[in-house]
Length: 203
Picture 1: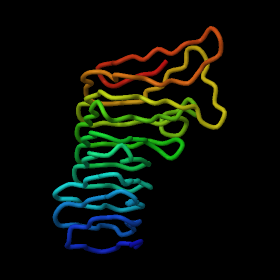
Picture 2: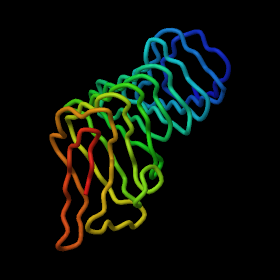
Picture 3: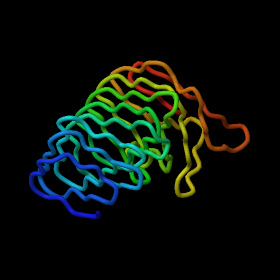
Picture 4: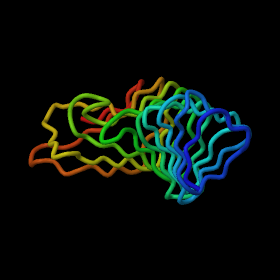
């Protein structure tokens, strides 16, 4: 059921409704499952997942808070990890979408980020500054990329020739997106996607 959570929770929770984390620290024992139709919102403070958080068809959304633990987004295309905040562990994305920011914003991952063939990274471009003008995924470890990159323009923004967008910033990059869906540009201007030693840049 829908609920706000504060203090210390000592049980594993299968989530089908909406849970808002509001406290300075919320600690959960065991696995935390975010099921289809469920939404977990980490608004502030830290939600601790000692055994991990599994997003299975639901949504894990950050509104400025932090998740202390690993996140596994697996098994369902409807799974969604989004928002502005941070994850202290690593993220393994088997299916579904990772969408940094709130049109736009930045999502930080302390460990590695692994995106497999069935998953997508969604980026919005609405300006020239990372985190405020366009979405950015910040990865403290290796960004292991496969699957799809989806890019959308936001709020009427029209990129100009020569502009650069560091959409992924990481310690290292492995592999590449198998597919890219990029927005149309004016005649004479095209996209260039660069895989660099410290991330992915869209020009």
